[in-house]
Length: 322
Ligand code: NAD
Image 1 (cartoon, helix red, strand yellow):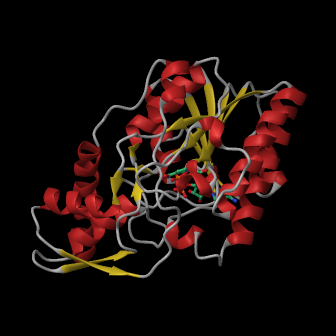
Image 2 (tube, rainbow, N blue to C red):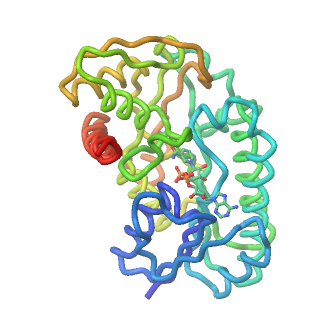
């Protein structure tokens, strides 16, 4: 039986990953500073603890795991990452986790580590035109991320690559592009655009008004959680180290995203555009490299994932009211 440790197992992607690995027959230990808000962990063992603490990391990486999935990070949606108020915490907390996990993994003779980087590490200058963003993997340098969250991801990517060269530990790195789906943040201030739009549409009656940060013409692509995990597992089983984009290349404006949520809900609402933190003007996954290296790329439509997500969030809204 293969063994895996999922760091960040109490989070959105980590929670889903634990289920997927168990379904594949792995023995899974999960670790997180908190338990999952929406589901009980299905991990064989779940350790609640702080990965910034080296003693805790030694406790959870106490054996030569076949695979470690390092997803733990201090993160959130635009409201958390772009306000500027959390910059030092984001850099400090996530870097500490990555430094600790690598150091102990090398000592424990761990076979392979997956690291979740982010599209937020791409240079701001290539994402000013909402219709033509460039997020090809080799466009990363000269570096110019638009957030400290992106700078930390870039540092940690380089750190994992250096550890691979110097300590011989096998690694895989993916740059996730806006992953969404059920069982993720939807109302705690860390939610991303798909969840935020679904919540606002679900909470507002037909004919009402929803608020949106900015003019809504900024563009993004969004990848449904199941496809993200498919990409992660394929990358782990391949011999390609990365970094590689794991994202959708179906780019939409935030206005279109809101209209899609309204259409799914069978509601007609107006949008009130208000000032708020926005991030870059345009971002889309470039899937040329993943197709070349893995012979695969995500293929679900945004609509399919949004329908599943809307239904889950609408049920949460209903539960909260009752
Ligand atoms: P999430 O916030 O739901 O999960 C991250 C988890 O890490 C949380 O449960 C959090 O409690 C945990 N964590 C934070 N600090 C910790 C600490 N000191 N000790 C132990 N656990 C700690 O986020 P997610 O959406 O599941 O993202 C997982 C990873 O993927 C993150 O590294 C994130 O940067 C990356 N990523 C996500 C997206 C996305 O769209 N969701 C996009 C790009 C990159």
